[in-house]
Length: 405
Image (tube, rainbow, N blue to C red; front, side, top):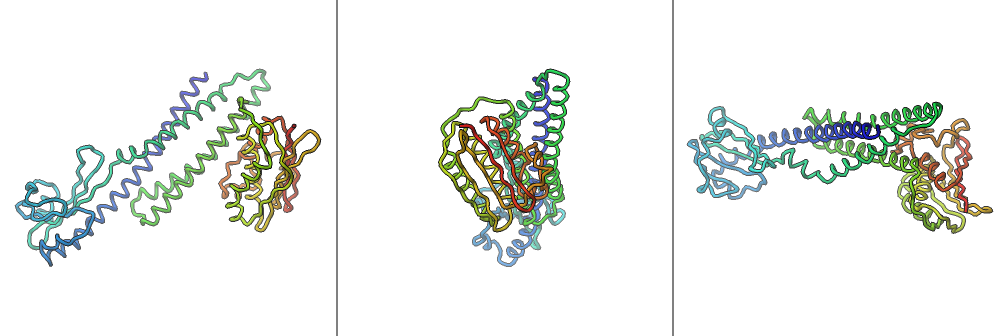
């Protein structure tokens, strides 16, 4: 069963991934090809006027990245910016030249020998009967894909790992009807939530891609759309990474433990979050003492980072996010207090649920995945710890994690 689920989930992931990559690259490629053709037509017009005024001598001073060729009505090459015209063969058989002679202008596209580049040609007939041709190279979709081979391979590996973990979770044999029903409900909610969380960025990417596909967007708009596509992709990657972390903690995998200084770790977290805190006008502060515990540094880092990140995101301008580390009896207490929006009493028990958000609009705007506090909860359990929350709306929140020494 596990293999079957893994196979189907992997196939679906690969189909969606391949389709998304091809659609986005295809739309962008088509847009840039249209823009190139338009530029060549415009360039041919003003260069043709210059050649009619100055003659072949214009080729001695022209400065352009595109290739410009002047051809006589019989196909003889009179001048060329990239090669010796005397060494070039007759161009009368070239499609764009023939069209220009017959219709006044002509256009064609030809592949290079390796099919990694296409050359776009545009030719116009001048008043004296000569043909002016302007051409430029354009990378093919195959070349673009080859350039993206490394990131695409990384995403494929991530999809394989995610499919393996999710299929393993889904195919677990649950003992007892009550437990089976409970797990089935949790799986359904988790799948539904994941689908919902992925739908938003995918819809955005599809929307921007559709607008680009129309081919009439300004270059500045293309840059904005590309940035939005990039931001939504990063959001999807962050969500997948958090899902993988939750899955690791659910599996109760064996992690390597070491001596960890909680106070020193807090200083590292504050240093990483300071730019975002400054942007949000939130002051970060650490109090307490250096306490060492035997734990998994990576998980402790995620616990502290998620708590501090929330204390900054859900705070107010000129607010305070304070980390306190103390020893009490046989336990280490790690507390993160903020002066932010607070949490209502009826929601405090639910904030550690997966994808649950107190302030959904603010969380989405801040790029949150809704899994941060769930990671905190599972991380505390991994260290045989416990969590306590104290909060009041509009007065702030304090979350304390107790680690046995």
